[in-house]
Image (cartoon, rainbow, N blue to C red):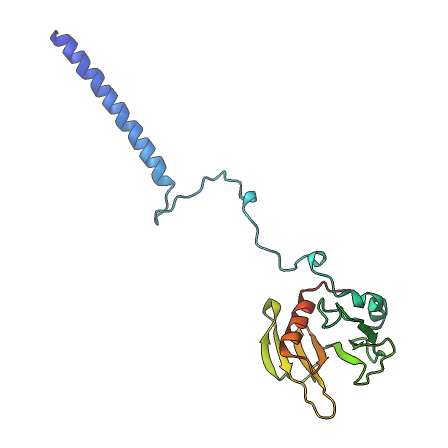
Length: 212
């Protein structure tokens, strides 16, 4: 092999090595630009962020929530006429799934409150023998007293206060109350257990609100 051929081969080899080195530096520089100082690869600028999951909205669609118990359907129009409050009615009512329970709207004394008596008969007037319990709500005012009783964690970060019944010749209602968005809600069941009232309260909070 002549000296001329050797020089040609060495020249071609040098050119190839130089080209490879330049290509290597280009690739390395590009990769380094995609990595931040903490070593985390940055996404390309043209990534479609619309495919990322969005956080759940604060105001969950009311139509997707469970319905209040069907026993309340007949009294909703009357309640909506007498109160400015949203109706917060439970989906669970003790005994209502296997025995007749009648919701009876108490006479309105203010548009900022409502009260429903739960009776075993349609004409129950609040007597101990025919009454299962009560459901009530009222708008909070500056004169409202602080809730007392046993603290109970309800749904959506709401704290309830349970007060047990007292019994003598007859038993009073066990109650659970909570404040939420400017209103106070109270459920009462005659001599009811705490577990029953908590379940009833959670079902009311979870159910679809009716009205405003």
